[in-house]
Image (cartoon, rainbow, N blue to C red; front, side, top):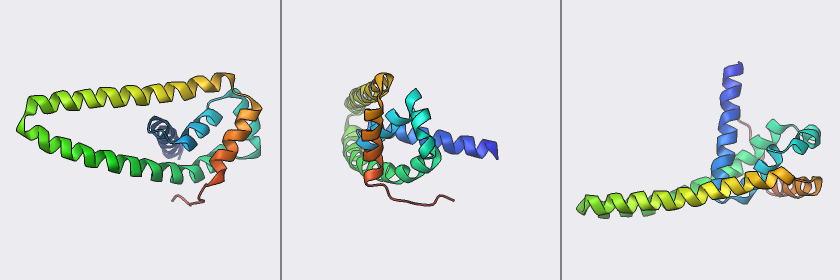
Length: 139
Protein backbone atom coordinates (compact mmCIF):
# COMPACT_ATOMS: atom_id res chain seq x y z
CA UNK A 1 0.00 0.00 0.00
CA UNK A 2 1.21 3.45 0.96
CA UNK A 3 4.36 2.21 2.70
CA UNK A 4 5.53 0.36 -0.43
CA UNK A 5 4.84 3.42 -2.59
CA UNK A 6 6.76 5.61 -0.16
CA UNK A 7 9.70 3.20 -0.31
CA UNK A 8 9.64 3.33 -4.13
CA UNK A 9 9.51 7.14 -4.11
CA UNK A 10 12.46 7.28 -1.71
CA UNK A 11 14.45 4.84 -3.89
CA UNK A 12 13.80 6.98 -6.97
CA UNK A 13 14.89 10.16 -5.22
CA UNK A 14 18.03 8.54 -3.80
CA UNK A 15 18.86 7.18 -7.26
CA UNK A 16 18.64 10.71 -8.65
CA UNK A 17 20.85 12.10 -5.86
CA UNK A 18 23.46 9.38 -6.41
CA UNK A 19 23.29 9.90 -10.17
CA UNK A 20 24.05 13.60 -9.70
CA UNK A 21 26.88 12.80 -7.31
CA UNK A 22 28.42 10.44 -9.89
CA UNK A 23 28.19 13.17 -12.56
CA UNK A 24 25.38 11.74 -14.70
CA UNK A 25 23.88 14.74 -16.52
CA UNK A 26 20.43 13.17 -16.97
CA UNK A 27 20.21 12.83 -13.19
CA UNK A 28 21.10 16.48 -12.74
CA UNK A 29 18.46 17.49 -15.27
CA UNK A 30 15.84 15.27 -13.61
CA UNK A 31 16.69 16.57 -10.15
CA UNK A 32 16.39 20.19 -11.28
CA UNK A 33 13.00 19.38 -12.79
CA UNK A 34 11.75 17.64 -9.64
CA UNK A 35 13.03 20.15 -7.09
CA UNK A 36 11.51 23.37 -8.38
CA UNK A 37 8.17 24.90 -7.66
CA UNK A 38 7.69 25.59 -11.35
CA UNK A 39 8.09 21.92 -12.19
CA UNK A 40 5.03 21.14 -10.07
CA UNK A 41 2.94 23.25 -12.44
CA UNK A 42 4.61 22.20 -15.68
CA UNK A 43 4.69 18.48 -14.81
CA UNK A 44 0.91 18.30 -15.00
CA UNK A 45 1.42 17.30 -18.66
CA UNK A 46 3.45 14.26 -17.64
CA UNK A 47 3.19 12.27 -14.45
CA UNK A 48 6.26 12.48 -12.25
CA UNK A 49 6.15 8.76 -11.56
CA UNK A 50 6.18 7.78 -15.26
CA UNK A 51 9.05 10.15 -15.96
CA UNK A 52 11.15 8.86 -13.07
CA UNK A 53 10.46 5.20 -13.91
CA UNK A 54 11.67 5.55 -17.50
CA UNK A 55 14.65 7.76 -16.64
CA UNK A 56 15.59 5.52 -13.70
CA UNK A 57 16.74 2.67 -15.96
CA UNK A 58 19.23 4.75 -17.93
CA UNK A 59 20.51 6.55 -14.81
CA UNK A 60 20.97 3.28 -12.91
CA UNK A 61 22.80 1.72 -15.87
CA UNK A 62 25.27 4.62 -15.99
CA UNK A 63 25.80 4.45 -12.22
CA UNK A 64 26.56 0.73 -12.49
CA UNK A 65 29.22 1.41 -15.09
CA UNK A 66 30.81 4.08 -12.91
CA UNK A 67 30.64 1.98 -9.75
CA UNK A 68 32.11 -1.00 -11.61
CA UNK A 69 35.19 1.00 -12.56
CA UNK A 70 35.57 2.41 -9.04
CA UNK A 71 35.14 -1.03 -7.47
CA UNK A 72 37.96 -2.39 -9.62
CA UNK A 73 40.24 0.43 -8.51
CA UNK A 74 39.15 -0.02 -4.90
CA UNK A 75 39.89 -3.75 -5.14
CA UNK A 76 43.42 -2.99 -6.26
CA UNK A 77 43.88 -0.41 -3.49
CA UNK A 78 42.51 -2.91 -0.93
CA UNK A 79 45.05 -5.54 -2.00
CA UNK A 80 47.91 -3.08 -1.56
CA UNK A 81 46.57 -1.85 1.79
CA UNK A 82 46.70 -5.38 3.26
CA UNK A 83 50.49 -5.14 3.23
CA UNK A 84 50.52 -1.85 5.09
CA UNK A 85 47.20 -1.35 6.96
CA UNK A 86 48.00 2.15 8.19
CA UNK A 87 48.90 3.42 4.73
CA UNK A 88 45.84 1.66 3.34
CA UNK A 89 43.63 3.40 5.91
CA UNK A 90 45.07 6.81 5.10
CA UNK A 91 44.69 6.24 1.36
CA UNK A 92 41.14 4.93 1.75
CA UNK A 93 40.12 7.77 4.06
CA UNK A 94 41.69 10.38 1.81
CA UNK A 95 40.07 8.93 -1.30
CA UNK A 96 36.68 8.80 0.40
CA UNK A 97 36.99 12.38 1.59
CA UNK A 98 38.06 13.71 -1.81
CA UNK A 99 35.45 11.80 -3.81
CA UNK A 100 32.57 12.42 -1.40
CA UNK A 101 33.50 16.08 -1.08
CA UNK A 102 33.49 16.46 -4.87
CA UNK A 103 30.26 14.47 -5.21
CA UNK A 104 28.61 16.53 -2.46
CA UNK A 105 29.55 19.73 -4.27
CA UNK A 106 27.98 18.40 -7.48
CA UNK A 107 24.72 17.65 -5.66
CA UNK A 108 24.76 21.01 -3.89
CA UNK A 109 25.35 22.86 -7.17
CA UNK A 110 22.45 21.14 -8.94
CA UNK A 111 20.13 21.87 -6.02
CA UNK A 112 21.32 25.50 -5.99
CA UNK A 113 20.60 25.81 -9.74
CA UNK A 114 16.99 24.84 -9.13
CA UNK A 115 16.37 27.97 -7.04
CA UNK A 116 16.21 30.27 -10.08
CA UNK A 117 14.90 27.63 -12.48
CA UNK A 118 12.98 28.97 -15.49
CA UNK A 119 10.52 27.37 -17.87
CA UNK A 120 13.21 27.46 -20.57
CA UNK A 121 15.53 25.55 -18.22
CA UNK A 122 12.73 23.09 -17.55
CA UNK A 123 12.12 22.50 -21.28
CA UNK A 124 15.85 21.96 -21.89
CA UNK A 125 16.17 19.50 -18.99
CA UNK A 126 12.94 17.70 -19.86
CA UNK A 127 14.15 17.22 -23.44
CA UNK A 128 17.50 15.97 -22.12
CA UNK A 129 15.80 13.46 -19.82
CA UNK A 130 13.47 12.12 -22.51
CA UNK A 131 16.09 12.11 -25.28
CA UNK A 132 17.44 8.61 -24.64
CA UNK A 133 14.93 7.24 -22.16
CA UNK A 134 14.27 3.51 -22.27
CA UNK A 135 10.70 2.58 -21.36
CA UNK A 136 10.73 -0.27 -18.84
CA UNK A 137 8.09 -1.81 -16.61
CA UNK A 138 8.82 -2.23 -12.90
CA UNK A 139 7.00 -4.97 -11.03
